[in-house]
Image 1 (tube, protein in one colour):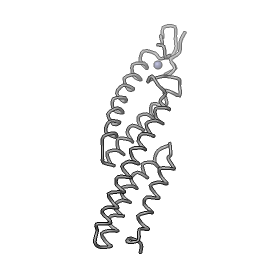
Image 2 (cartoon, rainbow, N blue to C red):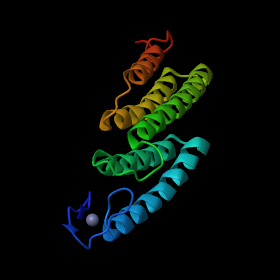
Image 3 (tube, rainbow, N blue to C red):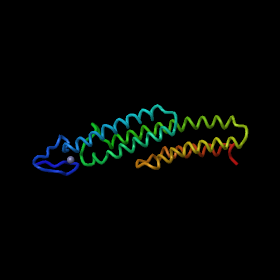
Image 4 (cartoon, helix red, strand yellow):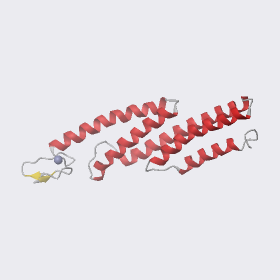
Length: 171
Ligand SMILES: [Zn+2]
């Protein structure tokens, strides 16, 4: 007699596959896994290509959400992808954070350039505010997820501060 790992149904005529799933669960879980994987791959491409922080964040959040939702299968010993989702999630987050840092550093250089070109103190301060709004989005994103990244958080805060103490900004 076999028991399905996911729904716990059992019986003499309940047949399970190599992962210990009944036909119904196997179909449901694999269909879900495949469609999620398609979305994840799509989001990953967008995160890699985009130059916009909003696009990077929103797609990163979908990827993290979908992978996190699939962890429940892994915890029951059901392998839905050929590799560990927990490991995959860590790698995906590392990659996302590298991209976020890249976008933040690019924005920092742009902001510094604009501050130098600005003629009034007011317009210089406006640039600093713009950079803060940009980077706060990244900080919010990092705060909301389960795997933190303190070095990135601190790096962003120090970039924000370094603009605030520029001689032409300082009050
Ligand atoms: Zn089942």
